[in-house]
Image (cartoon, rainbow, N blue to C red; front, side, top):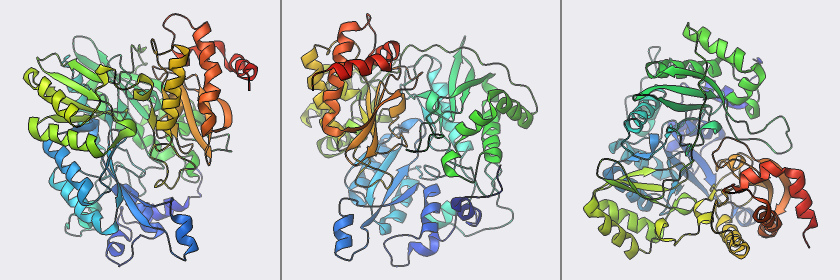
Length: 558
């Protein structure tokens, strides 16, 4: 590893285990934090942002940015009790912008929080056993797990492992409690970070647990993907390493990479092996250039065998080979399902994860009146779980009374249900162009196109849009990915697997938003003519190849 360190590494090193100037700047009368404070805030689950819709006008008036904060609540496996969900909902009105944003990592985000609202928001979360600690920053982020509560003798145990692993991988610093929860200030030699050390990880670190045969979590896009191995019950886990989707436009050495199988281990070994992998990244990941600091680049640079042997050296024993994996689906878990214990769960579609207006009121009413547990999904949707059979009709009636469309009644086009976007403008500081505000219009144009082509039946393509190349909505593993390239312009990716096992390939650059449907039209017409029975659009694009797709596009009338 290079001796040169990035600016962020110096800030972390001098932060006194994530304290930095945050406590002093919290009450200094300003509406924002310094750059040093902002970098440390991330570890506490907070991003400093400003409203980019008004940035230019404010500058012309001689005003500074209109600052606000995004707060991310880490929710392992997306599991929320009724009381926790209601507390989250209350805070949206009290301190946020009256919305909740479900993320692709089963977290909840608040947008539009003012500086003075940070401490009361975090204190309220803590009262309800929720935290923002390590929801962002160079640490292990929220641990994701398949949220479907099927009582198959495996999923509940996998969820328990996910929640326990999340707790084990939390930073041990007392800074969070001192700053936000008025804990006693106690920076001392006795305080230690046995896993992270004084400079934490080189970059963010993502972990997800799949379910047997169900890749709803996009397990190959993680730093560590964890797949259950099932025999008479849960026997062990196959670990995948080195996945990650972010890249930088114009820097060809950066790219999305899928995780590779490392080993299959007994379940009792899971925690120590995962911690060893994290330590290898801590000690050997690059700290000089953040664009190359994710573990995927370490695995690529070393090769899987060297990486595995280094993990073994940390453990002191040899790791077995990885067992082969098989996937049947990447289920979105929408609609009604039997849990297998006499109860039901209902998956509800939440467009781009934004819970607002009637949807928010209806979800709150359902939780209040029926006492339902909530689970968040990696597709930014929401499940009501443990629904008693006698509650089914009442729940449906409640949702209909709030004009909430039900996915199983054909009220939501499938291509809309399959789509995802990141928040992007106006709040995300990294966004180059629109995503959440643009995708609803684009996706309904595509829905009309599918209707004209007679493609409403059979596999419906998954379309994902991000406002920048960091890939938060996982566009690079989608059948159709739209990645912000410049203002109102996107790079089009095609051919990802609907099972999440293959990346999409770059097909077209600088595609204007208003041209997306017209570019897809000849490609979808080609798919209609030449697809094999049951073949998904992404699989079709991969089979025929980009050259054939480009030929068809160029042959289409202007």
